[in-house]
Length: 86
Image (cartoon, rainbow, N blue to C red; front, side, top):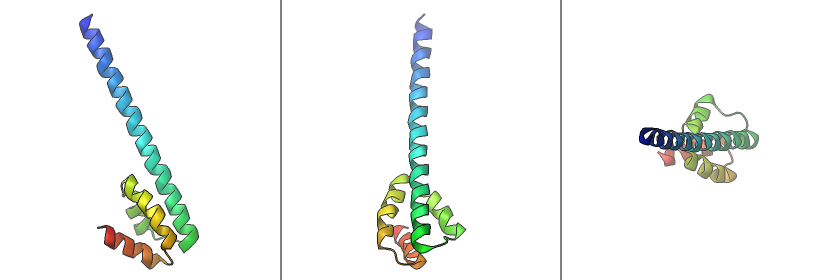
């Protein structure tokens, strides 16, 4: 009986972690999609290499980029942002 209680607890903890990871990944995907759409609308076509770089950013950096893009006037501003963030 004790083993089944422990098993149930471990299983439930795993489910919670999985749900949290799923929410985190969903949040990142939504933020990335929105930022890429905003950049495309503001600057025009974005090179696949830049899109790949955006997709590889952690969610906090994507959110920061979402704010920074308000000041961008050209693709070179986006490229410069990546140089500064490295």
